[in-house]
Length: 395
Image (cartoon, rainbow, N blue to C red; front, side):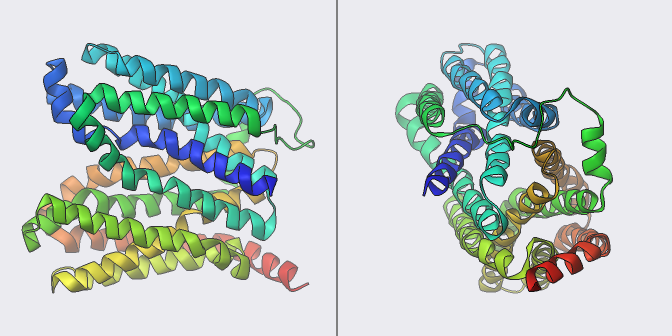
């Protein structure tokens, strides 16, 4: 019962800081006017937060492995909370940019420690189920964030959005401080930072396969997030409200996939689940390519399948890493987070070159080819682990 409660606390903490990524996105035009600045600098308040979030993943991993979970989590949450307050009272865009970087640094601690602590607290099938539940809770933030931000902005401006983040930050800080224990395994001795932590994760067969799959999965999913509005507008003439409903459907399907992901891992094992769910993601991408321009109903069906497979896959990589790298658990998950953020960043860059030249076929077709190659490579790398895991499960 305690582990389940702590799981919900960790998920809620991660979801609360995740809101900082997209809560005030609907308010960017208002923010530009209020601070009398350029559209470029306003967008930088989003980009710098994400960059800080990504870079700190590889910085913090070894610290969490060496110093402990609470020792890094609580100061990070304090920094995030005070930076959120400072953002609310920022009267210039340059001040806001500075505090958004600090906010991103503080926020970066939470999802990394949360996934690491789940790996510490749970084992086997329970770990797989816990990671799935965690991803499901975390997935709520991007779905409701813009809606909450839009309502708050309507009545209280951008200061209201950051004020909301400040309140939730302090609440979750208090809850975490009083309910989350130190979970660092007794076998994991405190040690100074070593570059070998990264090498062990990145050069192992499991680490290489999981990192490449993570990059491609988030590259693929962000292709949809970035370019789906353009497709729906140009091809099917949908308005902003209708596009929002499509994304809500996509998130709902992902929520369902996350809900059953733990059961899939429990039955198949994490290694086979990773290959299986990534293969399903590839199949869903091919279905989308074939159906996207035929009829809107067929496009919506294909998107529902994509959302469902996205939910299935999200929790499998961190579950596998948490079990494989006990001594370097936080480092492994931190490197994975950094790589998946790179996938998110690469999608709009590559897509902006491919989509204008070849539309859906070139953009998503090239993604499908890369995804197929990556799945085959990962299957080859993970084959010994899959056989070993199957024999252990049978015994």
